[in-house]
Image 1 (tube, rainbow, N blue to C red):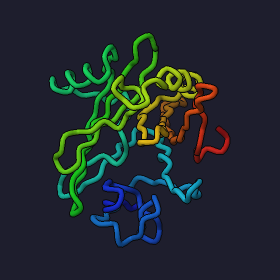
Image 2 (tube, helix red, strand yellow):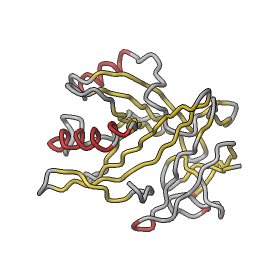
Image 3 (cartoon, rainbow, N blue to C red):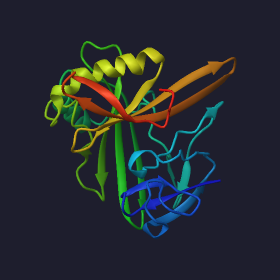
Image 4 (tube, rainbow, N blue to C red):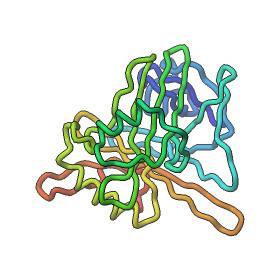
Length: 235
């Protein structure tokens, strides 16, 4: 069975390596609230800067992903865009302010709590104006604080919003046309973007979902995005 736990340095719920350390390179001493799950996941070989990332499991059939922690069911992965629930009025207002003209097409919440604190992730599937596809954006609240946006590109108030159209064009060419849904897009203070994607297929009565991620960097000279790191060497 795969193991996961709360990493004090990441301040997030993470998959664990065989030695009990965090998948992102932190030692086992930084990990608390260890638990097991029936979800199988492989840790790819280290990428640049010795980063280690997990690849989403291949799911065949009607597989439900859930964990039990302290009697509460907690999802192990970020929700897909089509797992929508009712959106509270305050969130509808905030999305309208942060993404004017964007349409909400999916919404989900996942929470985790442990000895290191609590974290709640709000994931929205949003369709940009004049586009026929949706992208996932994420807000995170830690220890009950106000939820913070993880997107600095698509939001008009984001630091790198001038790169939004170029990123949407890249997503259209490299994900949408390949049948991939963009489950989430988040960015760091330097403007580097992480895109998590999923692809669902069906063969007869069976369905399968595969997914991975890519880290993108913006090239100002060409006004284009390029892959800085991806566990998919064939991409």
